[in-house]
Amino acid sequence: MNHKMLRHRQQGVALITALLIMALLASLSLRLSWDNAMDVRRTMTMLYHDEGSQAALGAESWVMSMLRDDAEDSQTDHLGEIWAAEMPVLPIESDTIQGVLHGNVQDLQGRFNVNNLVRQNGNIDQQSLEQFRRLLEVLNIDPRFADLSADWIDADQNAELAGAEDAIYLGMIPPYRSANQHLTSVSELAALEGMDKATFDVLLPHIVALPGRTEINVNTATFAVLRSLSDGISNEIAESLMSERAESGFANIENTFAPYLGAEVARGLRETSDYFQLKVVVQIDTVRITYFSVLQRDPQRGTVVPILRSFGTI
Image 1 (cartoon, rainbow, N blue to C red):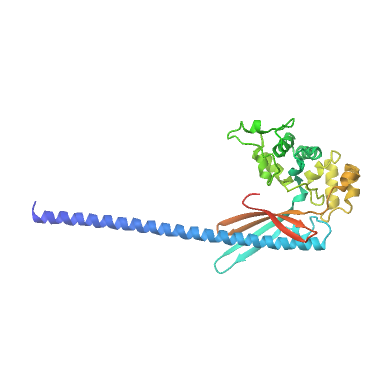
Image 2: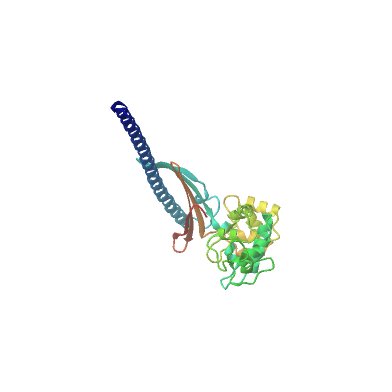
């Protein structure tokens, strides 16, 4: 091989080497640029999430103040009050962040408290169990879920006639046990034998899991919950009751409901509420936060405190 050919070959190798180095540098530069862009995106997402969380907590503080003022100014809670109105879309603006916030407040005592199914001593409350069965029938849901719910909450392992205890749930895949205690969230009922998402979605707007025993606020109760109060309340009567209360509540609860429930049971109904649920949705750029807060109001002390907070789920 002469010197000229050797020199040309060396030049070719050098060119190929230079091209490989340039390709490697370009690939490394692209990877670094991509990693940097992802780091910036993750940082901004975390920043937006933190800002959104703070905005949701700010909305919670505002609603707590609203509920305190409502307790001072009003002796009843009904759907015509300011807290029951849909929260307007509010802007979130700063030098670096722009977004919006909206939400609503719901009276949780307008729903059936599933914890009423079991007394503090762990025994099933038959009157509440019957009401829950009626509620399920109104919603065209298998009333067997009332017995299943009671068994899920009660303290023993003795299944109701249509219920289920650990002997059933331990045979599931994967196996699990019943709670055998009061619920902190109605989402636990999704674990009941035979419960599917479609059924649960129909039931969800009409039930709640509140600490201790609570009474129904008929001024805010859903149509189905009003129907469930008695076998004597038909669709027509429930519609008449809904029209009578309108947005300002019933004028006299005992006189209105005594013909259907009896005077003693009617006196146990409520026209005020102690538990409310705040839902706040915050949108900042592509970050969306859904915040839930259960608020307990004590009219005697004039306080409103959050007792349960969650992001994304009830």
